[in-house]
Image: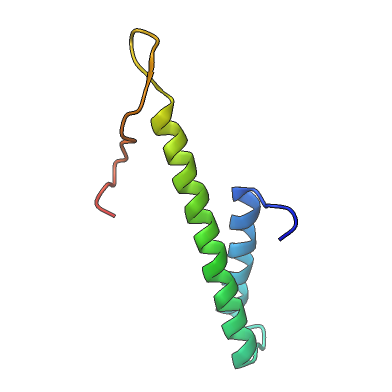
Length: 80
């Protein structure tokens, strides 16, 4: 890919693939497999972008004394 897509653009493409697969759109088996593979690829890209964003948040947590420090990123649903 010559130009890297943003998270939002990648997610939108993934949503299009999912919609296409859900509707069927008269896809052949081979076309369905290609769409599925593209969906997996886009999912991995989105996951990597989210992981990178989480790391940046961890690195930018500011302490009371105005020093920057790494701290775990707390989520409400850590068991997933």
